[in-house]
Image (tube, rainbow, N blue to C red):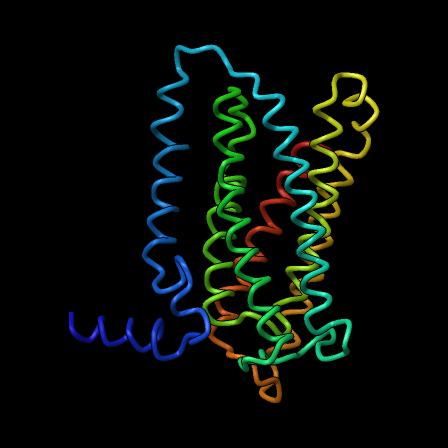
Length: 257
C-alpha cells in the first residue's frame, strides 16, 4: 500500500506542473474521477430510471443558450491559445515541449488549458439533456466514452502538459466544436432548418474523423527521442484518439453508408 502511495505521490505531486498545484480541482485526480463516477451513475442508472414513466422535457430555450455559450467559449479558447505562443512563433506544428516557466505566454497558455478542463466538465451536462428529452438513441457508448475520457484527458493535460504541442489538438478540437454547436443551434430553430441542415450531418461526422486523423499524425511527431515531450502521456493520448476514431467510423458507416 505504501508503494502505491509513493507512486501516486511521485506522479501527481513530484512530476506534475507546480503552477497548477493549488488550482481548484487540480491538486489530485480524485475530484475529476469522482465527477466522472457521478456522471456515469446519473446517465446510466439514476436519470433513465427517473424518466422511465415521465414525459420528455422540452429544454429548447436552455439548449439554445447552451449552444451559444459553447460557440462563444470555443472561439475564445482558440483566440486565447493562438495568442499565447502561436502568434508569436514560439509554438509551431509538430514537436514543441511545454514551457513550464512563469513567463506571460506560458501562464496564459496554462490558463487556457484550465478553461478547457472546465468546459469539458460543463459538456457532461449534454448527456443529461439527452436523457431528460428522452433522446436515448443519442446516449450511445461512443457519446458516454467520448465525454468521460475527454474530461479526464483534459485534467491530465492541465496537470502535466499545459502548453507546447498539446495546444494544437485543443485548437483543432475547438474549431470542430464551433461547427458542431453551430449545427446544433441552427437545428434547434425548427423542422425547416433541420431539413436544410440534413446534408451537413454526415459531413460533420466526417470532419470529426479528419480531425482525429490529423491529431494522430500530429501526436506521432512526439515519438522520436529528439522530441523532449514525456513519452508516457502518448501511451494514454494516442490509443484514446484511435479508439474514438474507430467509434466515429463505425457510427458513420452504420448511419450514412
